[in-house]
Amino acid sequence: MVAVVVIDVLAPPDIHLGPLLVAAPAITASFAGPRLTGAVAALAVVAQAVIAVLRDRGELFSANHQAQIASLLVVGSSLVFFCVLRERRARQLTQVKYVSETAQRVVLRPLPKRIGPLRVASVYLAAEAEAQIGGDLYAAARTSSGTRLIMGDVRGKGMTAVGDAALLLGAFRAAAHRQASLVELVTYLDGAVCWDLAETGEAEQSGETFITAVVLDIPDDDGRVDMIDCGHPPPVVLRDGRPVTIDAYQPAPPLGLGDLAHRRYHVDSFAFEVGDLLLVYTDGVIEARDPAGAFYPLTERVTGWNESGPDAFLRRLRRDLLDHVGGRLGDDAAMIAIERSPPV
Image (cartoon, rainbow, N blue to C red; front, side):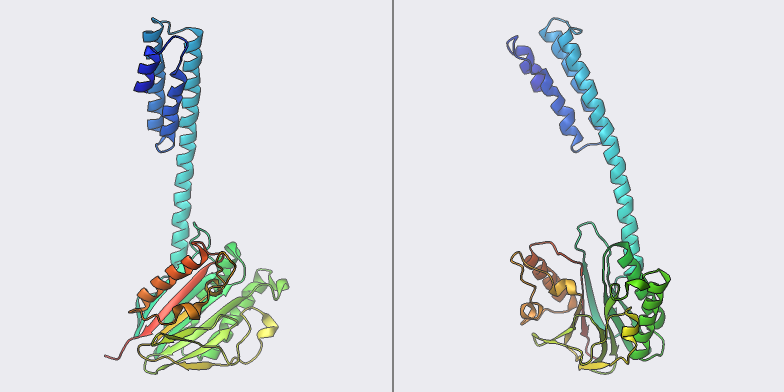
């Protein structure tokens, strides 16, 4: 503003730089609040008056200067008004983000770093930059003899998927610690999901609303894992840097398919020794595409990885996955890495 005033006063009579003063409040509004923007706008009006006094010998109220001062007042007032609206919107977005983060902590509680003899790390990657929670879910519960874990993925997006995820997580947390077999637990979870779909009027969409899930039972004193896979991507066990995909012998249908799921669940078992790393994930990982459309080759990429612990492993996997897709996922992705600690 000082430069505009000095140049305008010293310039020839047919050159007028006063209109450039509007740039000062406009630039200020891009980074400051309404008070500072209003103060700069007022200074711009004063600067225009100074030009009138020094350049035109006090002809402050000539038609030209009146028009320029009026323009500065209108533009300055408009900028202050929009700054007020922007700050109000920013406060609303901050509140929404706080509520979203609180909902995420309530629905999708962070897993502890250690559960019994297990070291655990988890990562949730949302497809949307501002999203905090979606249809991917995971939880763990302690029993008298080990740890039970669920990883799932609700078909669909939005608040309906969040509600279905919350229902399944609540049912799992309520029942997983009981002295029930893995088959009884999964049967209960399927019944809870089917009941919820019927209560919410979604039963007529049979086959369209469901939840894929894998439920694991990891005993404390046994080098194995029991698993029931309900249409979910199979876990991967890394032993000495070599990944092994654990495909279910008799995979069950996803939860919530009603009559299709009225069958006996089959429990698969696989070895999980000290030093092994167990990776459980949702389909957002293996269905992530690079710019050429190629899927993320999970087992190929992790071959030879010997990171020291689940945290380091997931940090590398997260970095590698985002590099593959160019920084942004097309779908939510969740991952859990588990390592059995040596006996004390």
